[in-house]
Structure formats: C-alpha cells, structure tokens
Length: 168
Image (cartoon, rainbow, N blue to C red; front, side, top):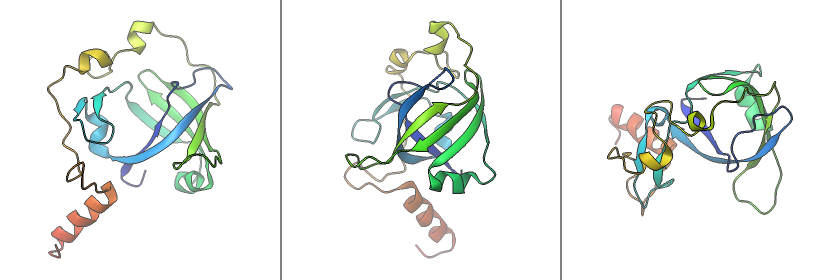
C-alpha cells in the first residue's frame, strides 16, 4: 500500500478458523524488497534474527478505499497465498498501555483448510524452517544508517528523491 509493505506482528499466529481473532501489533512499514528476502537481520538492527518467507501471494482489498479504511481502523482483505487463502479483517483497538497501535486480526471468511504441520513450518521460497534459516549466510542490508542512528524508510525515500533532484 502506497509503495511499502504495511506490517503487523501476530505473536500467536494467524487465525485460521472463522470468527477467531488474534492480537496484531502494527510495526514499521517495510520496503517492497523485503517481501523477497529470506535470511538474517543482523544483531543491533530492528527485527534482528532469522527471517522466513512463510507465505507468498497476492492480496485483494475488500474495501473500496483501503488507505481510508486503514486510517479509520478497519481494513478487510482477501489473501491469495500459497498457504493462506480467504478473507480477514484488521480492527484497531484502543489500548492505553501500548505505544504502537494494537489491532485484532479476525478470520472473517471460511476456515482455512488444514495442511500438514511440517508444511506450515517451512518457507514457501526455500523450504527451510526458521531454525534452518538461522544458519543462513544471506544478511539483510538495512536502509538504516546504523543501529545508533536509525532512519525511517520514508526518510530514506525522501533522501533518494532529493539526491535525484540534485538537492542532497
């Protein structure tokens, strides 16, 4: 959406049964390139550790204006992934005790058909488990200058645009 991967952490896993809801914590937007990365985010960087492409596919916004729906706090979408297919809804909650927006991810369509547990633990890209990926030599090159001088993805894009226009 708007040139970035909108992102939520779902600590207890994605709900698979109709009506089931799980906590989803909004996290920073990710660059589009992150959607094809599998490997290690080095220590000292946000999200450090192994990264697995658990699923891959397309999404379809169920709302006429998904950006507006997101701002209002209720976004419905349909996933067309290799593992996940179906309809879900994100609903923003109001919690005073958190600094980031917390949401509920609700399975609003039919149940997701069950798959073998081994298949659900493996990457759709490499077929590796998260544990196997922890041995990876592929390391993410962050857009941040360093862990002591973080910069947002939006700030990085502004710098690139300014350079292109000869202002930086």
